[in-house]
Image (spheres, rainbow, N blue to C red):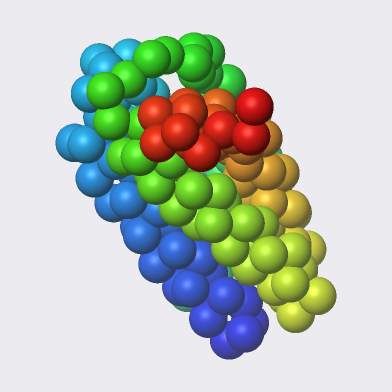
Length: 161
């Protein structure tokens, strides 16, 4: 179980980093709805942290894991309506969404890679679930990144048309 605990610890750190990033992104957002979406994403990352921490505590206390009760609080990540908006500084959103994409890919890779190393079936289930949720976030960010990149290119007269 030591390996499982190490994986859970690293996962907790990854989620804290993600939540902190989304809070910083919210501070930079010009649009209130975008700001609110980033804050909600930070809360989702906080909930991922809580799942990992709960699993860690159950294992360290040498208790039986009830996986279903551990994650029954939410079945999936929130799906936000991320509307594409004209903004004064698209370079900020290009940077934020670009970093968000990298963070989500890092989390997906981490959860996927660590599935091969875990000892507990319940830890494996949790890692699979978190991988799926992080992938949902990634799918939300990709079109926004492209949109704001195009907007920035246009503003810089870099557009290929």
